[in-house]
Length: 319
Ligand code: F6P
Image (cartoon, rainbow, N blue to C red):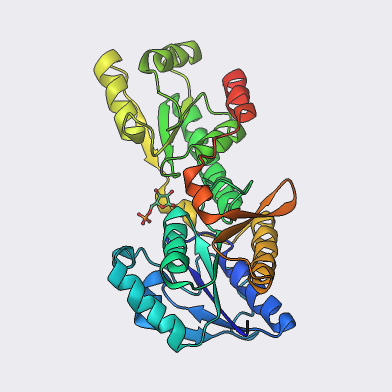
């Protein structure tokens, strides 16, 4: 294997740049040329390829976003789109690919191997931490720290005014971010997509706290009652309780990566090149209990990664 391409795809995640840097550096050491595909699967279809070297990847380890850019690409979900992409991969003499992203990215990668026999490994790059086969995903640690900083600030004003706040965090269908920041910020209640939210129980919790006191409720965006807006509305309809809503949104995806994310991104970058050189394909390279893992791509979305029960139990005790 002489030429390996890397791309970032789906929602960007802090640490993706550290990851690309590590892949380029490892490639140099192993005598492999590393190509960057610009703009995720869209860039692959359009043939936007660029040779990476240590100068192009210098001074990016601390930068948020992704210098390779990213996209959500409906065209790649179609067979024809993937044929075009495979054509570009072959035209550029690429022997193997590293796809950094979440489950959508991995579905695409799996198809590239199945339909075109192009060796490909995935690396977990998403703030959601919702991929089975790795303890943490690149970007998660930064996202929870960013969210916690914002929540601490909101708690100050909630406390001064004695207000009820619903603060919505990202995570699509997973409650990892909500649960971790809920515990870290001393929230009075945490609503996650994995469990049904009980409005009556929530109201009792608010009463215990005191209707004129600060109450901070963290809500995962995928909560079945419709996120922070939905819960706030239901509470008002049933009990006449008014509240403030704060949706943290994309702030959670940006910013300089934490040390943990930089180290994880660097380690998985080096390990992904080595996996391809060992002949591995159609796998995700992750990390569990400090060890590098190789798990079939399909398993990362077929198996559901639960929010650890020790976290939910702890939240229940502490709120
Ligand atoms: O998967 C990462 C994520 O930030 C989710 O938490 C969120 O639901 C989604 O991406 C938002 O995607 P977009 O930026 O494309 O709207």
